[in-house]
Image 1 (cartoon, rainbow, N blue to C red):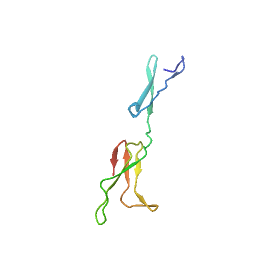
Image 2: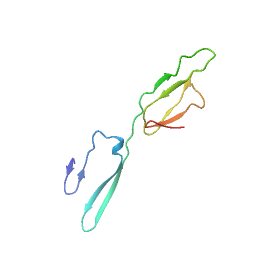
Image 3: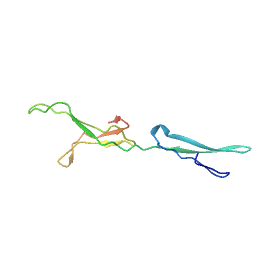
Image 4: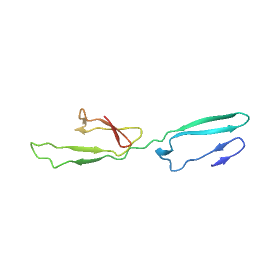
Length: 101
């Protein structure tokens, strides 16, 4: 608790993580009990994507490239680009390590 007066109670959360998300209740105790809810939402910035090549590309064969950004909230959008243009069908939404295709 950071501040407590007869008219004000203030808390500060430090090193906030997704596990801190949810409802926080401020309760007033009088003859009847009243409360207000503050809903905390925590954003997670996307990490820099990493790219890996499954195997060495051989002329006439296939090449598979994988792009991963480990976590993000709200969902990050990953897409492959070539020569400044998006490659159709390669867009994926990624949130906290889970793909939403």
